[in-house]
Length: 367
Image (cartoon, rainbow, N blue to C red; front, side, top):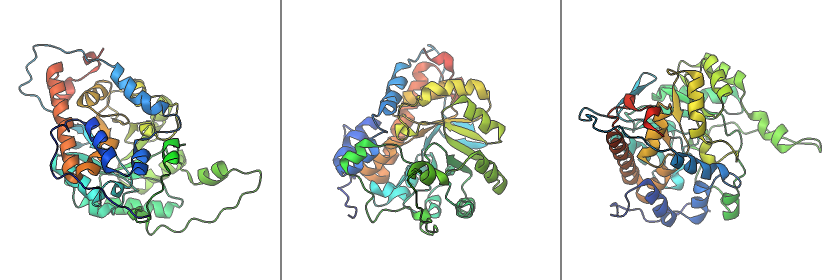
């Protein structure tokens, strides 16, 4: 089956005013199988639903009568300047949403002065995406079966001007995604990972009755802490680990010389029954200290969500599914509009909370 696209909007409807509106519109613009694949979480979607619930449970405590006339959302993280603290998370196979895929997303990110993390599993070559970005661009790395091919991806990212490597460590294999299974989702034949087209064929494996296709098969290719240590010796790019959810793993990453971590449960798409990122964020911040870079991921849909994550210790936040929905609805225009909505929501939240700058946001701003 090849990919067929629904008509894309060339103007934003009056009733499309939030990230959740893009989710509502996307259901009309995407094939049902693809929509279910993207919107769904792991197994019973307990983690997916808790992501929203736990963010909603946090309340904001405004400080009144503050002078916000010199306010702004500018921030600095790991020696890079950001117009605002929202990053586009690495989202795979974006041609599932739009024929221009990651190129359209990059163009929108550049227009709205937004950093972007480009996925190993992008449908456009990482070099082509980089050419459309003057904003901070980071490359998300999935370790490959061989160190040699993994290193070839790193070298391409270095040459293309990416400034950080974001190594995803919480998804060594797909979680149990029942919603996608029920919908019958399969990757269309004309959608593929452009960066992996030269990957050597995987060796054929055989198993006896005492072995598992999961443990002795899929997990045999998964990186370990030793591989992270090896990668540090192979590149000068700062390495960030994405998918950290425990204090112990965050401390180990810091001790190993990892530049920062993304506190994330993969949007509830891998292991179900995990804690939420917003629950673990303050615990990890307390453990690693005030200066160690932490990035929040999983559940961001509002400017108030961004504010809450910053208040609990994040330096930056990642935006995942909503960018896919916006891309499916209106291409680059949709992603740009979505980013403008979130940036304005954050500015309004900061102003009404009496915290005119990012540095003014702290746990004192929350109940």
